[in-house]
Length: 370
Image (cartoon, rainbow, N blue to C red):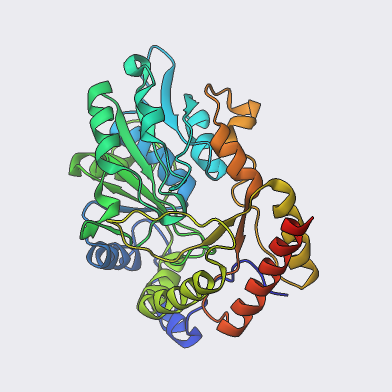
């Protein structure tokens, strides 16, 4: 069977050396030396400052909302934030969980990110935040979103779960907005098994977030306010440090696979239009079909051949009533019904990529002839 992804496992001896150090120190969590080292190395590699490691990507979003003031204990009215319905559930659920009412704005038909034209039609007087998603690592319209947010006096938190290592106009995409979050889940191109990170624009927000992830305890041990436990452990940091050592090879392998798919599938299916001023981290290879029927037929054909794609993202989140959200998104609903993510991970051979592409092309040809 060929899965849609396969978690990258680094050299076991190198991981063992880190584990030996953890055993000798007996320091398992609470901002240990490996967490500190990983923070320093990630800031250097990504070209960012004010990075905070946390337990997972969902808590990264929730911590960011609190640290920048989108969520406050003193809020006397319902908070509202604009976000995209074409995303993983965590984007909307993290808002709802924190008492922020999502307002879904439709996506651009080509980039699959939030549509700036749709955003400009929103009455921003009761909007407190904007939570855009760099979908499949594709950069949003940074300048347009920032301009609107400033006009609305709204906070901006980018969900950058897929955007590890992406640059925008020569600098890190992750340094935009009031905060940008990362997921370091095992399925991501860079991972710590489970983990996440927040990159803050302002150091004061980082300092508050450090207390928030440790029950609200201040630097000298006093309890200073509300908090939660969202710290990354030394064992998770050890895995991440090993993966980071191999990141150049991981990216090179993914790029080769991604480009091979494009070579064999361009013109056969619809591909995401990448931002011309941003780099590609080759995290995913999504394809869109002409309709849901063609998508379903291709998925069945792939699975029959032992290939497991993922219907990602589905459903469009504006179709889920439990978010209590406002706004509808026809383009998001359409794309959600037509999309598949094809396998991409280090170790997937180019011969196998060609085989997957052949199944897709045959399926599309049969659908057209019907």
